[in-house]
Length: 281
Image 1 (cartoon, helix red, strand yellow):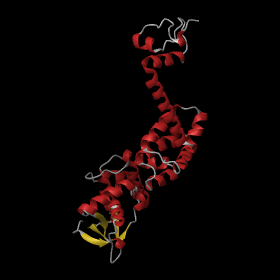
Image 2 (cartoon, one colour; image 1 turned 90 degrees about the vertical axis):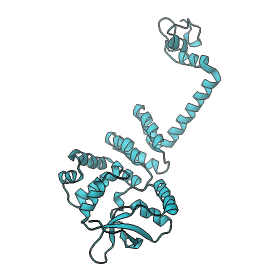
Image 3 (spheres, one colour; image 1 turned 135 degrees about the vertical axis):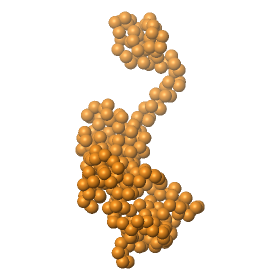
Image 4 (tube, one colour; image 1 turned 30 degrees about the horizontal axis):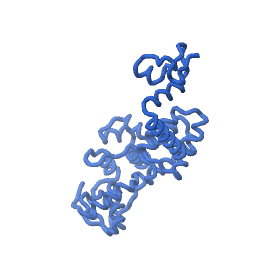
């Protein structure tokens, strides 16, 4: 099945399954630096075809992108003498090296099921996985808006954000998911920022959500400014000022205290109306 490794011209490599792999510019840049210093250590994997037809690459798309960035004309390739289906299944099921992201797995599974005609049961058996794993991966793709999938493929949206933010949002409100993905084209957010945005979206009212999906960056900037102002006020006023602020903004209890001032919360005793917000009625 595996033959000796060869140095193959890049133009003789067919990138047929590039759409099934995710572009990660940062990872490609790191790999390019590694290849520049140490050379290509891990070969690409390709399936040989009859005659002089190009080799079909099944693994190593990131390495090829790094080689092209460095201006190289050739790549070290390990040709496999098998059909494409067997090669893709082996790439999908092998456990050594870098694990696939869930969306990358889902794209390969969809290619094997829809493109090469494997049944879900057969694919699960050959990968050593449960059928539910295949079904969950296909369901992930069906729930992900096409615009979001394109953004993930191009490296503009992380796989984590797509799975943990966009997919659940699309299941709950597909229109909001589409609008969020469109907004992210002009205001890219990190995975941490999107997680923060989604946590606040869950708790927001319908009116606020309408503004949040169209202007996610503006919402986070306003939230950050509010946090900075609160932190500055706490630093200026100290613990006493924080206690008065909490007390004054809470409802008063029947005994004349807000019930949430610093003294009451921290010491479990009433401030006896000494805080401005706790004055007896």
